[in-house]
Image 1 (tube, helix red, strand yellow):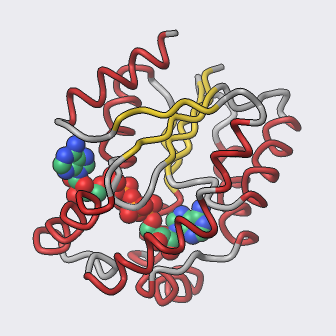
Image 2: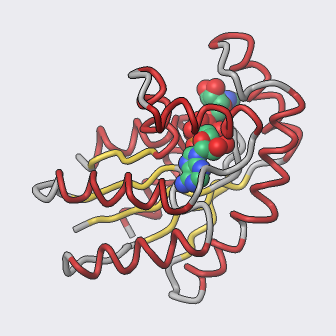
Length: 188
Ligand code: B4P
């Protein structure tokens, strides 16, 4: 099975590139951000609680997001492979994902890390804020999301580097240019 982690700071293009990857490689898309927004749209207790944390740019608790991923994996055992988008975001989440996959005799094949300059991240997210009105795409929250990424999420890259699964990809350029770079990593 091909099990990918698509990694990078907020606005690096994880959601955008995931769409292209799932179309070509027929993987199941597991985005914790999308699942949490879905919970809010359904007005569940979890969604309402998480929305306050997301609007501040902080991370939802490890326990909640690990539980969500576990349920999705249990419900989709027939998938050809998975793409994890926005998960894991802490080293504890990465360890839990390894344990979960091992219990299904599977493992992460590769982590693809989108590398984008900070100024470009801010510009992309401000633009999306204007176009889509997402509650966390305002300047104050964007700055906090990037700070949270640097402090809590960036160590996840080292965790996969230690397993020789870390693949940085230049995330500046057009969506198609970046996808070509990702394809060449996956096809290798
Ligand atoms: P996410 O939904 O994962 O949001 P994100 O990191 O901002 O990335 P996203 O995928 O949406 O954006 P993308 O880079 O594709 O998380 C939101 C919140 O949920 C978190 O802050 C946290 O609170 C919570 N959460 C989620 N997962 C969690 C976890 N595991 N643990 C704890 N909490 C969790 O795209 C951004 C914009 O850039 C788009 O508008 C796109 O059109 C544009 N873009 C993409 N590629 C481009 C390119 N090449 N050129 C120009 N623009 C481009």
